Amino acid sequence: MWCYRGGSISAEPRINDRIRVPEVRLVGPSGEQVGIVPLAKALELAQEYDLDLVEVAATARPPVCKLMDYGKFKYESAMKAREARKNQAHTVIKEMKLRPKIDPHDYDTKKGHVVRFLKQGDKVKITIMFRGREQSRPELGYRLLQRLASDVEDLGFVESSPKQDGRNMIMVLGPHKKKTEAMAEAREAQAARKAERQGQSAQTEESAQDETVAEAPAAEATPAEEPAEA
Image (tube, rainbow, N blue to C red):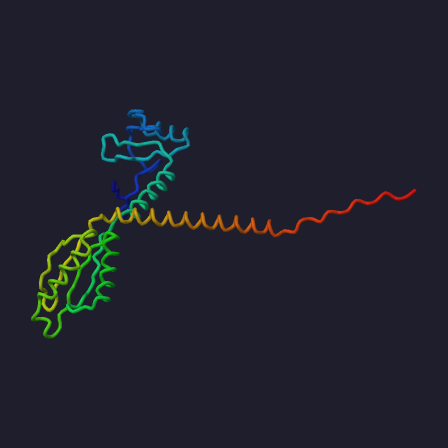
């Protein structure tokens, strides 16, 4: 709800004495319908409940107002918005560049990066770069892209087939797993690792305590005093 106040625009609802209407349709603290009451009565009830009168539907006739703790409401709304932004998935396109005559070791390294990107739920743009005479052998790049797509088919699929783009050949791989699923799995794995580390730390402390107790010397027995002779 947008309202105009003295030349500035605000998304904040009107509350308490900022509400300027003769009567309102009032909603109670628990969501119960109180009905249409004069504004003065609504403000009186807000004071009795030690709450705020908040205009939640300004365009209604009469406007709808609710009794609530506005400060608490704003805080909870901000927390919900923050959590929503935290869980929001942003699709990222990573890029990996290869040469047509790449050696096996470099290929395995590049493929490892592609696997990691797909597991994270990201798309991967694969670019084959041709130089010199390699430009007359586009089939080399095509076969390399097909090989890579086959090697990672369990994690991704060919979203954009290989195509020539000047001196380069480009293919885009899309992940089977959604970004939100990948993020959730990553958080679960992180929590599991943290719990495992805490468990190992606790076991180490217990073992150290047991060793300390075992190494402590036993108290020597004090011989009983012989009775003095008469």
